Length: 67
Image 1: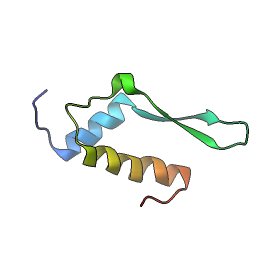
Image 2 (image 1 turned 90 degrees about the horizontal axis):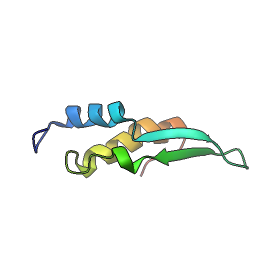
Image 3 (image 1 turned 90 degrees about the vertical axis):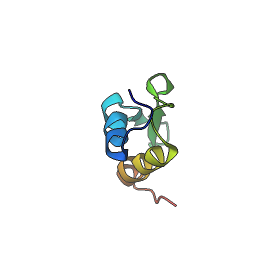
């Protein structure tokens, strides 16, 4: 991959690799967020794309507020 890819491509890469997953529930019934570091392309994506992906996709799914 090139060293600089667009934000849209970065978001698509995050979704494609399924870095963040909702993985079951704990003993109290809360949803568990699983971050898979093995698939995390740290050199290809920016922190802004990761933050955006977490805020939009996961925090809304988990019914939290993103600050």
